[in-house]
Length: 76
Image (cartoon, rainbow, N blue to C red):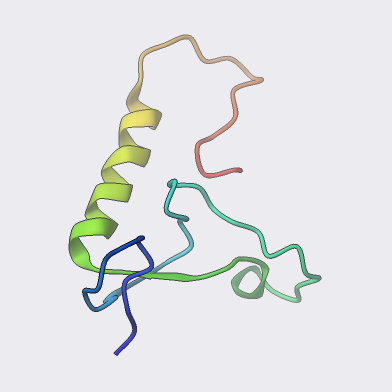
């Protein structure tokens, strides 16, 4: 059993994700030969995965002014 990557959660990690606990894609910093190898992977229980996805969606939906300099929430 793979444990959920969310701090202090002991549930089984059933959802594989590239979202960090903060809700951002995380680069490994290593040279990678494919997109899959370029990012760390996390395992989350359904509850924490759903929570992270909701937080990302909320940031995307915000109606504040966005221009060409706006950084997508998954780009960091």
